[in-house]
Length: 391
Image (cartoon, rainbow, N blue to C red; front, side, top):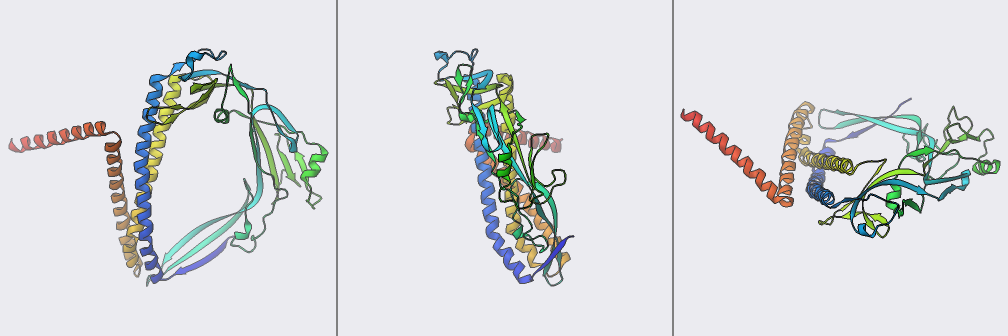
């Protein structure tokens, strides 16, 4: 059953808060502007670093011998990564020859969701009704139910056994005659399930301090360790523990720099580091194209973030205008719509200007060429329009 909470805000309080929002608006606009400026410079550097690597890399044809002739060079290499390391999770009786071993833990908990409905009253006050609903779900961490609003659910969460997540990686992974760095090992993927082997003693240790005699440790068919009374009908407090591994061997493709029998990031002339790891046999050209696509995606994600922050800042900055008219709700809605439109237009224009100026700063030659082309087009259009009028 839903739980509701109603709060009221006076007209005076709303006006006061809207003026306080001016400061937040300025902060958001500054933050968005900084992100937009930084992002354009970052994108240019990333693009130049990629071109630098593309211009200088060579193929590493044989990884089975360390050739001094490739020392310090940017290379593309494909081969098999292997390790003799054994990764262990003694608490659950696991010992595997793998490059990575991960323990994942989830807890069955009550979770709180909320939705709010605002009603503007004649005279300028606002009434907000917040509805809280609750459902049980598997969560990565225990949920603090002491902060729940509904007294019927407050403090109801607990866990039968708190278990830490765990991630291990092999320390010694070979790539033919070369060795892979920890950074590269961490990027090797291809997870597969691990099936633990629990002894009765280990099961009892997991149930230490659990007073409920119906609770047991069950090993499911998919390798999940379940702590609870019934794995097919979960109860609050139940725990699931699963394991994955990245087995050895794995075929890996690299764009890296050779240094002393291992690999590290390539540092371009502009100081920007570049490295790439992909699973399987992937050509250098395809890897470079994948990175170009990733760079473009990152560019637009930060652009969108910056634009949103600038628009939100303008909205917060101008919010007091519509708030002043809150004494008559329908008038406030009309003013608010206009303020929102102005904030969006001004924010978008400001963002475009920042991006354009950033391009001039980071790529002046290209920016000047584009401006000259634009000026030439404007001149041509104006001239053509004048000729038509004369005719």
